[in-house]
Amino acid sequence: MHKDLQSIVLTEAQISAKVKEAALWLDKHFEGCDGVPLAVSVLKGSVMFFCDLVRAMQTPLQIDFMTVSSYGSSSESSGVPKIVMDLAASVKGRDVLLVEDIVDSGNTLLRMRELLVGRGAKSFTVVTLLDKPSRRVAPVQVDFSCFEVGNEFIVGYGLDYAQQYRTLPYIGILKREIYEK
Ligand code: IMP
Ligand code: MG
Image (tube, rainbow, N blue to C red; front, side, top):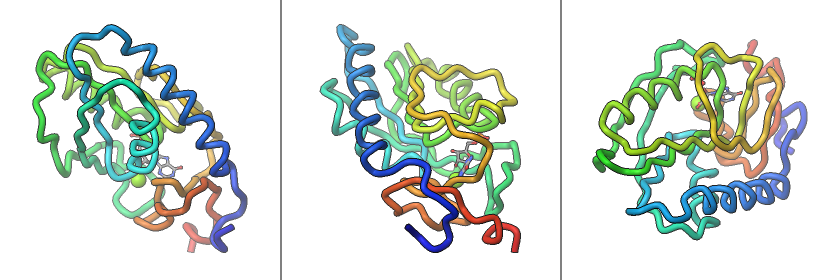
């Protein structure tokens, strides 16, 4: 375990088993859809989950990326998600699969939904690796959530604190002294 972590909450094996479950659920969900859905990774946090998920799915997909920033370098959301890099593809008339790392306040997801549905997406499906329901502010709906987590600040498998710890293959709780110093 990384020295800055207090404990591990999700191991590589737990994550990998759940990603397969999510892939099966999504394959069923998209069965019989016409056209090729566009899978959108919300960068940077969802990148590890996204790569594992789309490779586990059987549904033919196109992929695209959008960078959204809500945190600056702190552990508190500013509440106003900013689009740092937009999609290359048009979503008009397409089935969109939005892949999130974590739904916390829900502000990022709400903004993404407004934006992509506003651009004419035919359908909007949301899959998230992690869900912190106790922190929800915005009224958002998630179609498939892999794990519910508590109020602790967690890192790893894409999730960061001040851009660090994203490359850890597991998810753990960051020691308080790291973000309180
Ligand atoms: P929301 O807009 O408040 O739902 O926040 C979504 C974004 O906040 C996520 O995509 C993450 O980048 C970040 N975030 C929320 N909670 C955590 C956490 O515990 N660790 C790391 N990043 C987090
Ligand atoms: Mg982040």
